[in-house]
Length: 251
Image (cartoon, rainbow, N blue to C red; front, side, top):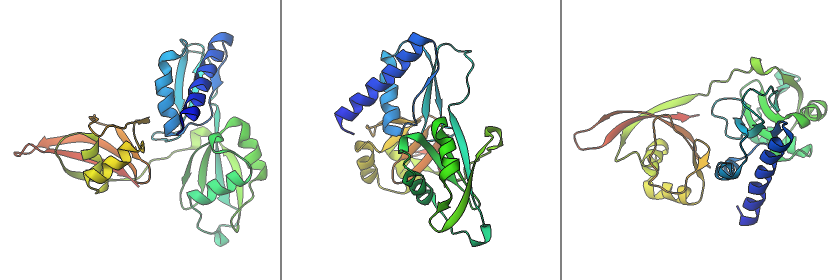
């Protein structure tokens, strides 16, 4: 990301927090990608004393928005909706993927920042979006590729998503970021270091650019282009001083 873009996002976040503080009203950002979330965490130190809530709609959400509130118990409604997209005629529906849904939404003129994560299964897709575009999506999204679809706002309480994962058990020389990622994705440490130095790795939503970063149990590690793992726990230390760990690789 260019320094100019970084500066704009940094200042915009400060402005939104300041507006909440000055006017005593809730203010929400658009959905932030991992780069923007990293800028947000840096900007927190310069923000006025407001309450900050990170929201992605579900556990392990990658894209999140920030809601600024005047004080802790301030009443609010979540500033996002969940759109459920299903085929109008399931018998004749194509198999659609994440890219198909995202492409159709952006073809409606919706910029990526207005959209959170998109979760797909065999029967539907669930799109998180800011409130301001939800009605537009429901009214205008009728076809994806050659499949006619129906889009509807679903009650948030009905959304129940449990991510699938495979458990990986193995040994690492240490709990350094590069060692754990190498085990999780089956790549060499030298290969993984390239991802880390390129700013493609985040831990709990914060971009980490040092391969020596030490992980803690339950940390979530996202690697752009590879996927997401969780360092679940340490099992034991071997006689040769290596650490046996259990990871969860999300699929």
